[in-house]
Length: 221
Ligand code: DX5
Ligand code: ZN
Image 1 (tube, helix red, strand yellow):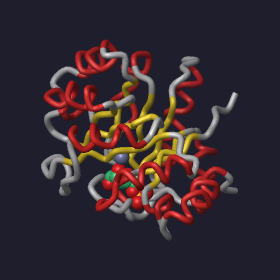
Image 2 (cartoon, rainbow, N blue to C red):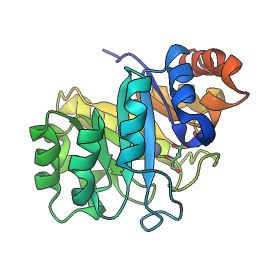
Image 3 (cartoon, protein in one colour):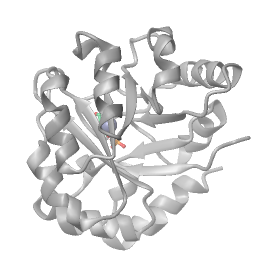
């Protein structure tokens, strides 16, 4: 049975000078998650925000805080982001010494855990962990910046992950991040994804367009 489609606006594309207001507005506009792209300028060529920013934004929305760690030192920051109010923590497995240990640490703190695949990483890398995680985050761009073009090469990967989860009867989410907009959202959903991360597509035009932007992703045909 197909899962409900969830929209996760990435605040990377929002107005950083008023993040609290932006999070309240996009939450009211119908977001299911708030997606935080945490970048360290090391694993990815950009720098965004840390646990203190997430902590200060927690009071602006009751939505799920979906924290995507694009950082080298994942293990050092798990507790700070958990304490800051993260509900989901997703990390790139190449940035930890022991994937199972990091998964366990996040789960033992009663948070959901996701593994992230960059476009050049084969999905088989995470198959051994599927039974232990809550979601797979497929990058449809090389991470670092919003506004990039969706990489069609990732559709096959989404299909393969979806097939595997169906074969093993696993109820995990497939989240896709990068270049998602109303013109390609449907093919991503058809491939098996049920959580769409979108920065540019959600925040374009300013507050008065947020509700329409989110709806056009949900209803994309
Ligand atoms: C990695 C970031 C972006 C962002 C989405 O670069 O994770 O993919 O969330 O940005 P848009 O939706 O503007 O491509
Ligand atoms: Zn992201």
